[in-house]
Length: 426
Image (cartoon, rainbow, N blue to C red; front, side, top):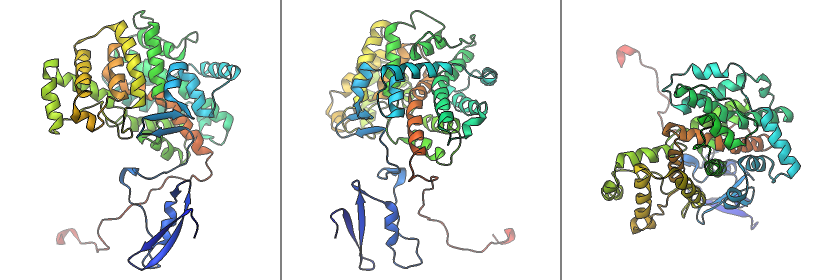
C-alpha cells in the first residue's frame, strides 16, 4: 500500500478502496469507483459553495488565512504595496516574475498604446440613465467593448490575447470614468498618456482638480488597486475561470466576473460599510448598534473575513494609506463614526474572540469616501484593481491542459419519474 494514498472502506458494502494522493489532495473523480451497484454513477463530494473543493491548480496567489498571509507570485502583499506600482504588479501577476526595467518600460508603453476606447463607446455609455448604478453600466460596457474587437475570439492566438489583456487593463478605468462624468452631467475627460495609471484615472474623474490630484491621494489609489489585484479563487475569479472555460473572448469573461463582483457579499462590501455608517448616524449610537450586532439583529460590515482567521494583511497596510489620506482630506461625521467604531471593536472581547478585525473593505470605503468618490462607484474601483488578477487567472486557465469546460455535478433531490396529468385532473 502506497504511503501517498488514502484508504477508504465503504461500510455499506465492506469494500475497501485506495485513492491516490497528489500534492496533498485526492481527485474527486477517483471517488466515482465507490458504488453499491455497478450501474450507479459513483460517489461524489457534496460541497456547497466549494468551501473545500479545489477546481484548479494555480501559481498566481497564495493565501494562508490562519496566519494572515497574502502573496502574489510568492511576494508578500506588504512589500508590493509599499514598493511597487499597480502596472508593475499587474505584469507580475500575468507573467509570474517582476519585470526588468526594459520589460516594464515596454509594458507601460503597450498599455498606453490602448489608452483610448473605440468610437461609439462614449455614445453607448451616454445612453444609460444618469442615475444607473455604475456597476450595471460597467458590466454592460465591458461586454460591449468586446464587440469592437472581433479578433478577440481567437483565444489560441497569444499575440491577440496580449493585445486584449492590455486593452482591458487600460480601458476599464476609462469606461468607469466616462460614466462617472456622464452621471454628474459633466463633460467627458479623455485619457492623458503623460500621467501614471492611477493619476490618469483620477484626472478623468475630477478633471485636474488639484485637491483631488494630490500626490498622496494618487499614491493611495495605486495602493488600493494593488491590494485588490487578486485574491485566489474567490467568487469573481471562479466565475472568470468558469466563463473562460467555454472559450469566449476575454471581454465576455471579465464582464461576467464583474457581475459576480457586483454583489454586496463580494465587491459591494465596501459600499455596504458606508451604508452601515450612515445608518448608525452618530457616534452616540455606536454602543446600541454593537449591542444589536451581538444579538445578531444587524450585521457588522467591513469586519472579519471568510478566509482570514486573523487580521486581514491588506487591512494592515491600507490603514497606513487611510491615515495619509485623512491628513489631506480631514475628517467628517461619517469618518468619525467609522474610527470610533473601529476603536471599540478592536478592544472588546466579543469581537476579538470572533476574529472580527477590520478588513480591506472597511478601510477602502473610508478612503474613497474621503476622496469625494460617490459610494456607488466603490465596487467599480474594486473592478479596476481586480481586472489584472482576473486576466492572470484566465491566462493560466488557457494554458492548463487539465482544464475542460466547467460542469459541476449536483445531488438530485427532486421527484422520481412520474406521469403527466391533464390539466383537468390536477
